[in-house]
Image (cartoon, rainbow, N blue to C red):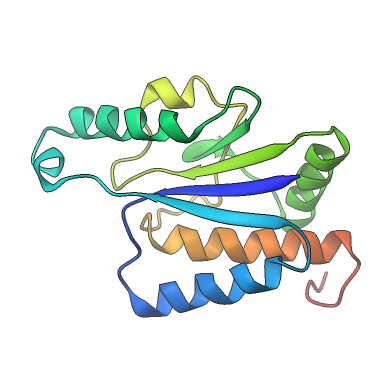
Amino acid sequence: MKILLIQIEKTTDSYLVEGVKIYTERLKNYISFSTETISMPKIVRQKPIEEQKRAEALEIQKLLDLSDFLVCMDEHGKQFTSIQFADFLNKRMVSGCKRVVFLIGGPFGIDKSILDKSSYVLSLSNMTFSHQMIRLFFCEQLYRGFSILKNEKYHHE
């Protein structure tokens, strides 16, 4: 199984870039993990929010395959404990899923057209975090999930 993280716009804060890099490197021991960053032109950022989200959706769609298991990260999604998330990952692996795509939307969230196509909607917290911070939190939880599946010491119950 492969995991792809799609994110909108580059991560600008160096501490977040470094944190994501650390967990991306650690994930190589468990799974094929990659990221795709969609950059939107400045002219799109000057449009109303719904138009921005639609423009992002068109770019997201270009990166998706019909066979992908798409997980949209959205504040209205289901929440997991770390152990439940590990179980979720394990179920995707044993189901024969070729690629799981996790999507972190832009600053205004994910367009309804993409949410409607998703296989799952996941929330990492009841709290609101920036779309850039959530990248680090997600990568850490992904690493934690695989360390749980391997019964390694990283996760302490």
